[in-house]
Image (cartoon, rainbow, N blue to C red; front, side, top):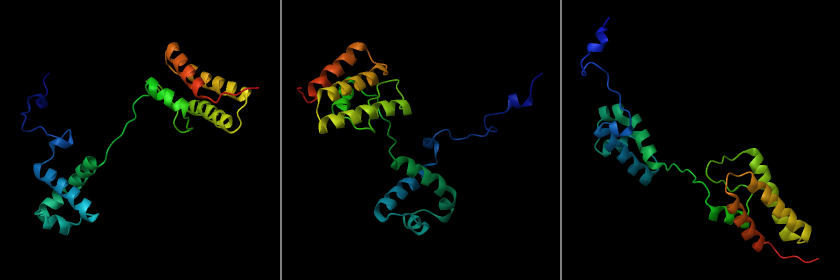
Length: 172
């Protein structure tokens, strides 16, 4: 059995915008005006929009959508890229507890942060009080951290060799 809804004409079906690009041209103009007004004065009032050539009806109809468009256009959304081999080496040479090396397909977890923090603490201790046991401890903790990352063994060895060369040389 056929449903009458299957025979609706395209004009009777509601059309909803899928993206901000589907906004009314006057709404986009208002969004750009809002961005300019905000950059100059730090705020946008209805009086400012009227001065920019918009009517009360346009302000009532488009102000909320235009404010969202202006915000979306003004805010930069940053995503971090996965660390490459050079990034991993650099982070291991100058370790910071809040910046662990995270290659592709690796999430920052509490366990990883703890392991990385141990290496960072050992590295800081080595700089303050260099002795052979501390140097070996640094290399072991770095090796433990790297072994838990999804990187090739050859890359692990490259990181280990490079970092080992930068550690202070200590003699007994």
